[in-house]
Length: 313
Ligand code: HXC
Image (cartoon, rainbow, N blue to C red):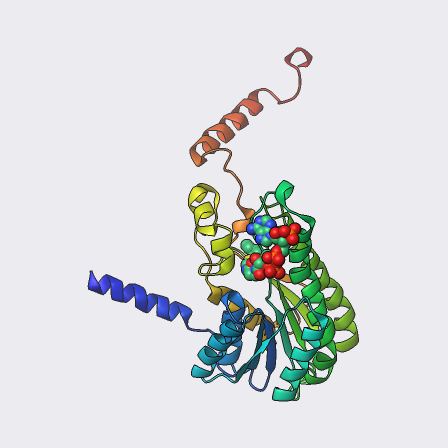
């Protein structure tokens, strides 16, 4: 029993090791909104472990303090900057502080987000607006105010062909439609659109790459608990590819890939990291029923063409 437990944990430990070299972001500076917790924190930690200095931005001082001390304990150069992505003044101040502290800004990760489950008919206009403000307007504000630094700082001292980088954390909610998340679905659709517009304009003018990551349900996050991800998964086991919740690590690895030279020709895309879950749909027929039905129809159609009335044959 103990051996099984040990080997399970050893496997997990191995799984969590980064496959990237430890210095791929050496000398880079990242600002991560929503970097104090959840996916944003894990992205901050992995960018830091791979050589970047990190400024984490968030609304709650105590969350930022805990994040910064955890990052520093891993040898990462980190600062915590308190502010709200909805406020342009906060964005200006925070980016300026990060620039003053570290001397450049190469990477902006927009991970700040707000969400809650609510039937559309019960959602107030202010509730709708609040989520749009955090996710979509907040992303735009941060990108807009970071531009002047990404233009300068991002023109890589080491590699002049590499400009600055923006990563917008999105979702797959709006690819089809998602129950009780009309606000977040609309907000993330706008985020994807912002990603493409900026990839076009700032890619052409400043060599800045702008990409997104669309996580599926990720274990141990505010999103997973607020949106009941675990419950939903257990109800729909039959229809869900790679039947499991993702890990924050999965999203951070995608961010590293986009931020590294491996991603140097990726611009304007939103990388879905969800194990294929957004493709889930009810299985209409069992596999057994398919093989019987499919062969039977073929046999029948060989004898009698389908769709032509018997009287016409
Ligand atoms: C209905 C709600 C509500 C709820 C808030 N509101 N919660 N309506 N059901 N559960 C309404 C309020 O009544 C109010 O409208 C308006 O929203 C603003 O609420 P405030 O509390 O004043 O806003 P604020 O303090 O700014 O908080 C923002 C928040 C909050 C989004 C409501 O939950 C928050 O700060 N969230 C950040 C953390 C978070 O949500 N993380 C999860 C992200 S998950 P009225 O009309 O009454 O004034 C994620 C993943 C997406 O993004 C993809 C998943 C797969």
